[in-house]
Length: 138
Image (tube, rainbow, N blue to C red; front, side):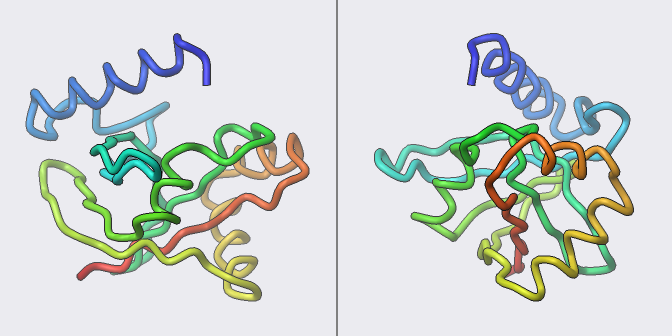
């Protein structure tokens, strides 16, 4: 990830945090959550804004990284440490990150691209299968 993208993410999370979830609650007009993971190698806390798919009481995040050839760092972190913290609109809760397997992944992926068509473009940009993660409240 380039330095400009990293600075944008840090700034977004900082604004969200300082406003206690009242500002920086969207990205390109779409609601976001702030996902807190533990570094896969360091164990250090990492926070990143992510656009989720919300269906009733279910919440999914998509490890697209805009169609980059590699998975985003936050995805590698939650694979190593699946216990995460989710924050949305100033409310926080713990969750277990469950990487969806087939055929469930494809079923939810179809809902993702129906709700947010840009994700289909991301899949076309990469040869990797973009992971879909269920954030199961604990």
